[in-house]
Amino acid sequence: MVIKGLSKSFGDFRALHDIGLEIQKGEFFSLLGPSGCGKTTLLRIIAGFESPDVGSVTIEGTDVLPLPPNRRQVNTVFQNYALFPHLSVFENVAFPLRIKKVPRARISDTVSDYLKLVQLEGHAHKKPNQLSGGQKQRVAIARALINEPRVLLLDEPLSALDAKLRQHMLIELDQIHDKIGITFIYVTHDQQEALSVSDRIAVMNQGDVLQVGTPHDIYESPATDFVARFIGETNLFDAGVVSAVKLDNPVTEYMAELEIPELGRIKVTTVDEIRTGQRVIFTIRPEKVLISKEKPATKREDINLFQGIVDEPIYSGFQTKFYVKISEKTMLRVIKQHAKYSDEGPDIVWKDSVYVSWSAHDGYIVGIRDTEGPNSPKAPPIPTAGMKES
Image (cartoon, rainbow, N blue to C red; front, side, top):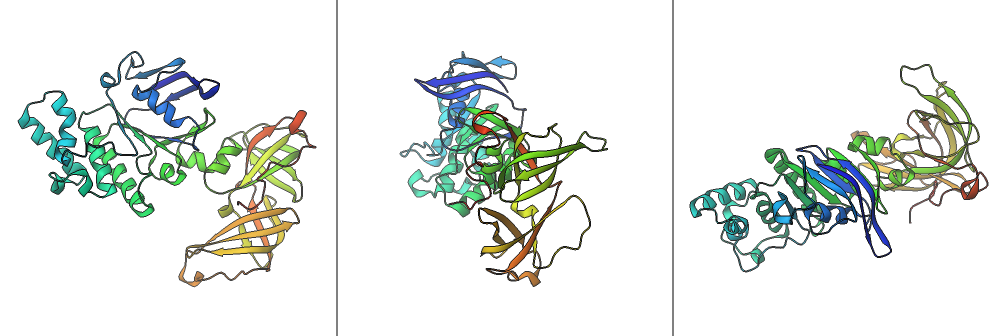
């Protein structure tokens, strides 16, 4: 599927702006972003329920925008299931085939196959009100797949389920995709859902696609400060470039020294060319930061090392999250994983004096600010820089 130059406005509200995406055949592709970012509008345009102002949507070489929804070979699974309450599970799944006037014997065999696919073969004669939420969603998926579409669109299909069932259904959905092999386009605002099952993810905000990449790319190498904040937890700081030296590597890379207000100087590597005096946005993931009571015995020049006080430790069994106060205005999140039985509890507690450190290769520059205007060096740090979430 190829989407080019797609824009859509509702009155003065710009829902989508010049969207361009290429989704591979058979890919599990997720549209991820907060409510109102445009992901559902984009899905509805692909499905044929909305028309764009400009742009094109091509599926296997055919521009589908002039076609009505029933001729696009695209089916949609909605978050509210949209099942017929008066029909049995069998008849709900069979409905698309009956509309096509498929022979009765073939309907019976085909519906049985798809009920088996979604593990509902023993529930064929039940009505929707006799099913759990997860079972209803499986019926909706089977009904959408029975038409053998080229693309299956899933509009937050698990949002109505509780957390444990949602995780279970997510695994089942991924298994169904592996068996069927068609293109899935999955809309969600849940980062963990997208990271768990997607081949690639498009992160959206305010009608724009900010980054497209694998889950690893999106998490480890965020393209913007919004992506860094939206995907998982991170420490985010406004900084100024003090120096930048090109490294002698096969891949062009720079070792930069940054000045962060209320924190001090740090080192970070970057593949983007930067220059002295620029204002940048720096991020470091909490799990990349090491914490200890003793000063680390290292002579490596690429290690950033600071001392602070534990302001708040939060024990979660498999990990402990520490909020470490580095200065009066700067708090650093640190996550320590408990991978061994001997790590049954935190040895670092509230008010402990600690050292925190990370490699220059683990931090990341996620944006370059202008050197003049509202984002000048005199401008205050970005709102969430290094502070606790509310």
